[in-house]
Image (cartoon, rainbow, N blue to C red; front, side):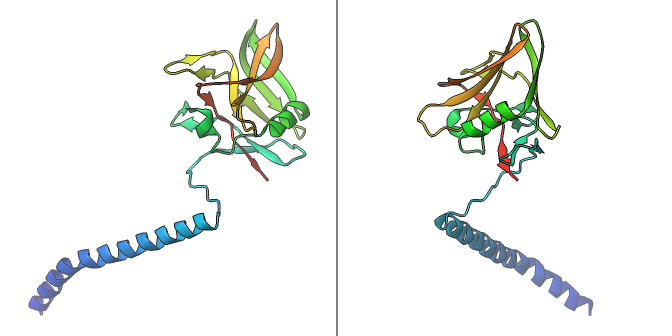
Length: 188
């Protein structure tokens, strides 16, 4: 009987690799075909393993805003407009709704912004920290808040918040060849 077990173990060792190879090849091919079919049918799939937390601020549109900027590990992720625009960044309309429907508290010393707190109609809030922007090699405009917004125009638009004489100010600027932090949105 011991001889039969040895033969069975040898047989299993010789053949298990081939069986696993065939099974994995089938699974890969099936997944590839399903993905190709989804692309043909334009079925959107979010493949990111994002840990983004969204906050319901009670906005009329039902837009949920990310609690923080997108991260690359522990650090703020700076993206070009072309890359940011492939994500769910806010539209200009979503930004204007946030700006107009929420109460804003600009916290800083002198003209240096430390944070901009955005309090929604329901009392929930998100905070924008001044992460600045990146040029080709370094972070610049450190005391200011920037993030990308979607636009239908061919220009790159960003929200720009800053503190001046202890009052918050905002505008949209065209940014060329810069990388900015990204804040995501999604619908309820």
